Amino acid sequence: MEAAFAQLLVEYCLEAQAGDTILVEAETPALPLLPHLKRLLLQRGAYPVFRIGYPGEGRDFLLYGGAWLERIPEVERALYEKADKFLRILSAENPLEGASLDPGLSLKHQRAWRPLAELRLNKRWTLTLYPTVGYAVGAGMGTEEFREYLKGALFLDREDPVGAWRALSRFQEALIGRLSQGRELRIQAPGTDLRLSVAGRRWINSDGRRNMPSGEVFTGPLEDSAEGEVRFNLPAFVGGRRVEGVYLRFKG
Image (cartoon, rainbow, N blue to C red; front, top):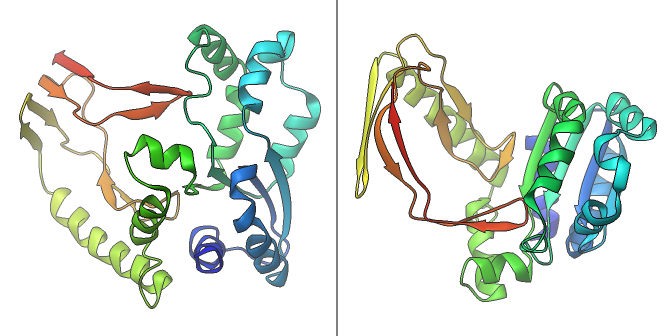
């Protein structure tokens, strides 16, 4: 799986070119993937810079970072400014590592370091996920079962994964052609009945180049148009915490 995964990331997601400086961020559980990435990137003439964190490193920074939580080191800023492309591999050993921390610490850090996030968002970036024991537990699956599940979601079980993603991209572009003609969306499901105006809005094809895996088209509604309620029946890991049971009601 790792060799095909690396090829997908390098060839399709990053479209790595000679001379690219590519910052790769991951945690140690993703180590089996990294040699494949490095070899392919170097073969294409790109220069990979790897930043490998240990399990719980983010938690340690929030607990002991002190003034650095709200101060961007110049070496960090220089790294983000010089990099041409970014690859972040979510590979937490325990996605709930920060569950017991004060959420204000993470919020304070995110706000202060936002300029780095904006530097990344204004360049070519890809966010993906490597199958770890922690993610398998969170999904209620065995480790190998989750690995096979992710393999299918990445199209790595296809003969030509890159070709499969390109075909999906074309299919979704056709969907955008239809949706762009619409003026209002109504979303109905158990606990959900929501109306949104999308007249004149631009639709985005999320075809795996940014988030891998993906497979959606999306837009933003007119800011004062949301009316109704929405209930989310699946949990998510956000900022080291498990979030579930979210219910929102919109008016104007």
